[in-house]
Amino acid sequence: MIVAHGIGGRTDLPIPISMLIVGSAVVLVVSFVALALLWPRPRLQTGPRYGEGGLLLPGQRLLSAIGVLGLILVIGQLIPAIFDVTIDPGRPSIAPVMVWVVFWLVVPFAGALVGNWYADLNPWRTLAEIFGIGSRERIGLPHLVGLWPATGVLVGFVWLELVGASPADAATLGTAALVYTVVLLAAMAVVGRETGLTLFDAFTSYNRLISSISPLGRGPTGKLVWRGWLRALPVVSEWPGLWVFVVAMIATVSFDGSADTDWFRGLTGGVGDTTAGATALLLASVAVIGAAYYGASAAAAWLGGESWATRAVAQRFAHTLVPIALAYAVSHYFTLIIFEGQQLIATLSDPFALGWDLFGTADRRVEYFITSSTPIWLTQVGLIVGGHVVAVVLAHDRSLQDFGPGAVRSQYAMLALMIALTSLGLLILSG
Image (tube, rainbow, N blue to C red; front, side, top):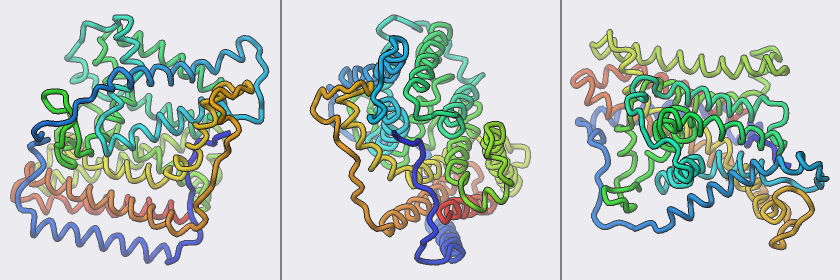
């Protein structure tokens, strides 16, 4: 059965971790200097530039149907327990691979390339449309409440994955999916369909942010068109709590990657061995990275001559952390997708582990075709460093618009934060 974790640290790095950290810091500093000299005006702040023509997407209904079917298959894991049907312990159920691989990883990661297809795949939006739920929107609520509820949902979902007693148990996932469906549909009935998804569905915000990196998006006519890399990120809605949500995206993956490393266990004294301790460390990870980012925002505001604007800076620069969050997640989980994702082929034939073989693939096993750690290591390092370089670019471009002549000076603290986060990612990599 699938375990809801990705690749851990590596102790066989081809060069010392200290040299790797120093080299990565040099790359970021050189990028910063090059931007200061060669990028004198903001280029990304006007948002997407949609091209002509585009690709009509006739598959919207198909995606919606797939999303609902996936949700039904996950909730359906409760059926064997309700009817006391014997489950084959030698076969995995479909729920863990659907939730922890397809829904949590494949969908948003693909969105970074092809745009926000989760908007069509979202099963809760489709169910609300089918049953006519949430037709009256309270459009002012996102500006008042923002992403704070969604942040709580995101952290709670990751808690279920990393701290919960049985994250791969099909019945547990089915119960969680059923409860989440009832609560989310009730919320949409009260505040409106799109408002409810914005406030309470963490996956709507998560996919919206990740897919804003994509060069593809829906144009004014609804067709899929070229809009340019990163151009949708600087114009994401700056609702209250945006920066905390993005910080949580980074911190939760950082906690997952570091929890089993020797240096983290030595630092925490084994506190994470209990559920309460692990919960406290997960929340502390969000708090520490959040405090570091807010401190860098305060320093940026002060250096840029806007010392009163710390909260505004934290919101305005939150989008610059999204590539870091994506780089952390992909570098940590990509082997989970490659290997454990293969279980989807088998579990589609026997989704409830009842001994079925609907499509003749139930006995298919995972093929571990990567025999050398070098490709994995190179991919991890490239993703982590590359994600931070993109973040430096985004921060520089935003600072040119917000701080004008003081733009470069205002970014000293943000550069220091980027170096620190790069070092953290590589330290996790080293195990």
